[in-house]
Length: 178
Image (cartoon, rainbow, N blue to C red; front, side, top):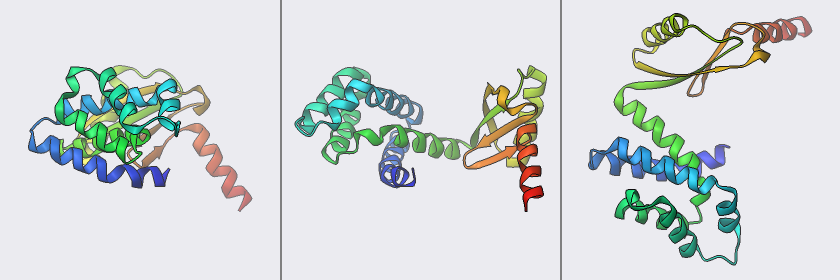
C-alpha cells in the first residue's frame, strides 16, 4: 500500500497544481474520479495488464470511455500515466488528490461507522465535535457496522478514533494478556 501511495503522490500533486492553476479543483476532482472508476473496471484492468496491449491503445480506450468531459489536458494526463505504466494507480491518485483538495479548501472528510443507525442529531453532534477538534469544516460519510457491537469508529485520514464496544473489548483483552 505504501508503494502505491509513493507511486501516486507525484501525479496527484502535479494534477492538483494544474487544477489550482486552472481554478478548477471540482472539475479535476470529477475527472480523476471518473478515470479511477474506468481503470478499476475488471475488463480494462486486464487489458492494461496485458503486455501485448500497447499503452497508447489502452490510453485511447480510457479517453474514449471518459468522453468529452475529460478535455485535452485530461487526455494528456491519461497518456502520461499510460506511457509510465501508471494507469492502475489512478484510484490512489484520486484519493490523494481529494486529500490535497480538502486541505486546500480547509475541510476534512470523516467516515463514521456505528453499530446502529445514527440519528441526524447524533451525526450533527459528532460533526460539531470534530469541527471543534480539527478547526476545519467536516464532511461525513456514515456507515453501519453491526460487528462494532456498540459505539462508533471515526476515521479521518490516517487518524482513527475508536469508541466502539468491540475496540474496548480488544484493548481490555490486550491489557489482560500483557
